[in-house]
Every structure is written in C-alpha cells, then in structure tokens.
Length: 196
Image 1: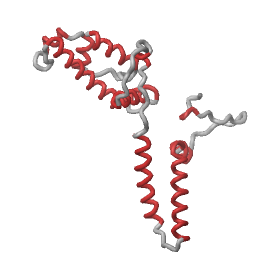
Image 2: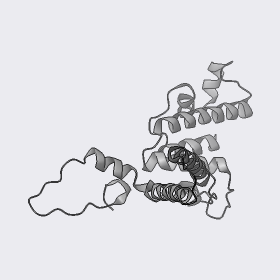
Image 3: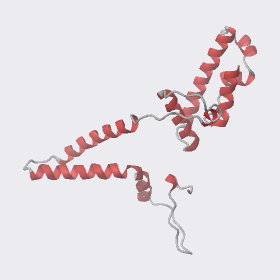
C-alpha cells in the first residue's frame, strides 16, 4: 500500500512525464469516491421516479422529488452508518496480555476504541479525543483519590498532592500530553491508575 488516501496506488507515468498537482475537480472526485455507489443509486432512483411519474401522466415536480429523495437517503444512510452491528472490541495492548478474559460489548467502549483508532491511525478528531480522555482520566484519578484516601483534591490540594503519584498529579492539575490518544502513551497512565 502506498501513502495515497485509501491505499490506492497511482498509475505509473511514462518516463520523462511529471505528475502535476491534482485539479479541484480531481480532489472532489477523490473525496466522493466512497460515496460513489450511493450517489449513483440516488441519481438513478431520481431519474427513474421522474420518468415513471411522467409515463403515468402525472406532472412530476422534479426538484421537489429530488429534495424528498435526498432527505430520505440522508436519513437511511445515517441509520445504516450508525446502527451497524457492533463487533467485539479488541484492545491490542491489553487483550494480547490477558487473552483468556472475555470482554463485554459495551457501546461506550466500542465508541472509545473507534475514536482512539481513528485518532491514532487516520488523524481524525485528535484534539477532541485528547480533551475527552483527559477529562475522563481526571475523573478516574479524583475517584481513586477519594476511594483510597478520602481526600477531595479541590478541598485539600496539599494532602491530595502528597497522596497522589507525581505523574498522575501532573495529569490531574496540568495539561494533557498532546499525543494522549496514542496507545503507548495512554496505556502506562491507565496501568498506573489501576496499580495505585
């Protein structure tokens, strides 16, 4: 696979010919590539319904028919894309170590795993994932601090800092690392929280 989007290798050019920058039309075509079947199906349905209503002797309102089809298609596509059956979530760093344990199929865990994978491999939504992870890790640290020591960090910051491991305290009061979404950064933090 090459570094091209979607793993598609460009066709080799004849010797001496340089590949130019993609045109605006080529960029649009490339962006719509995953939607090609859906859009072609939508256009064919629209043309077919327009012809059918004309053949039946009705006066088709073609733009309104297109608007109705677009709204229905958007709803159906959204439902298809977001209600697909959820597969069993596999955490490579954890499940490799503890392969004998069965993991649940919680939507929240599957959603988080998908967001982490997208941020790590496809660079999608990194800032929001880092922010959400940081907030959740802060909640976990506060809960662990209260459960183990009966300390509320905001009420007794000096005691809380002395009872909290330094790396977790820095995460609680400071900014998160910008690459918190990466498994090699997140895994040691989660293990440290579990061991504390």
